[in-house]
Image: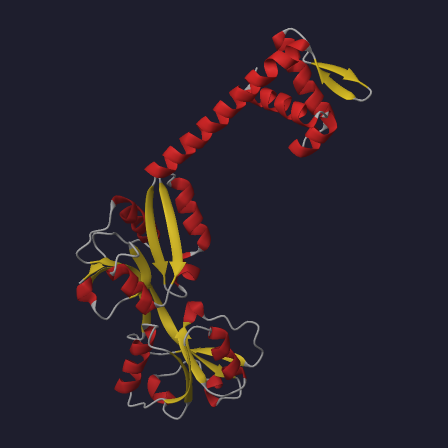
Length: 303
């Protein structure tokens, strides 16, 4: 005898029908009948009188039904209590991801981590780089994967990813024929830029300044990269962005050109509040990915 057989028995009594019960349980009526006949053999007596109109309980069936209901309820309540206890004992970590970081890290990798660490629940959300920093500082997030902060004194930073920058230009632009460009080559261009909520933007502006370029800004985007690509497609300006985050395959008239400057790159990693050391689960999460990038938690802390 097993609990599922008693569950099936109770369900048949509730529906007064093998056919309806089989449909609700997504099994064949033949399989359900076999299950009940097996239960009857194990009990040693029939539970139903079968007739052309359906089924009726035998006297033994009537006797067993309330006890079977109580047994099924006790079992279901136990499973709920066990699941609640397990979930309560799981460690929960709240993680913020700046735009593009989850794309590079890979959603599948997050799922793989959860499957390998059943004792950890993860809450994830996407924020701008600036909001990632703010939420880590105010305690709403345990950690965040974001671009290296300017105010490194407030955070412990664990470098993870370094990606090159590219210029995204219309194919009619003379830059499109170049194999690479320097920031000095961009002095006469109009720019589609991101707002300063993206930490990559101050990096780009700093390189403009070093190259003596005063950007002629056509448009600033706060979140929608598609708008930036659309403006480049219309030849309204060029867009400087991260190579691995650039997806222009659906655009026929734009291309990306590498920027020839070893100091111009997108530097992203994990941040935690400096005076709040990461808990064991947060360390597990960070180490899981740092190890994949051949880094070590104790060696990547930038001050």
